Amino acid sequence: MKQRWRATEAVSDISYYFAWCTKYRRKLLDLDIRNRMDNLLRSAALQLNAKIEELDLFPDHVVMCITAHPVLAPHQIVQHLKRETYRALTAEFPSLKSRVPSLWTRPYYVSTQRIKPEEAINRFIDSQKNR
Image (tube, rainbow, N blue to C red; front, top):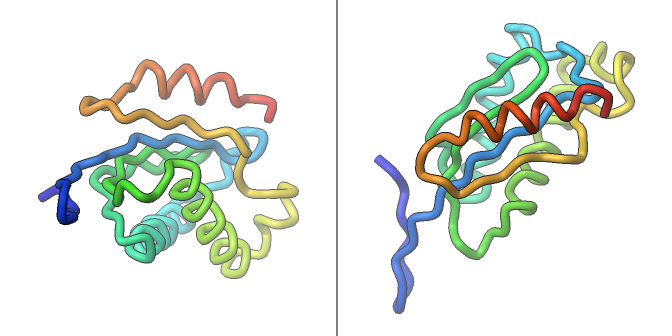
């Protein structure tokens, strides 16, 4: 069930689709890292009082749908998720630090569409090959 927030004057139901890639689109996220990352992302979302509705983890990118409180801007959400996963993954998997200068690219894709914008996400991911 989707999470909703209530205030005195409003009820909100805001979901974002996010996508971001690993640095240089390197296939850094093996199965062990993806399994750990699933837990890390869900934990980081809870810190924001947000809920991950859908999560797809690939060797070189992340796609998710997350429901969050309307006071959080999309950039705050994605920065928090990237920062928390970077810190934990590089601590637990030190080889990641030696393979890339940072785990994630700066750019990310965000949409508020109700239906997964797969074509737009794929275009974004393809554009990140040399970042």
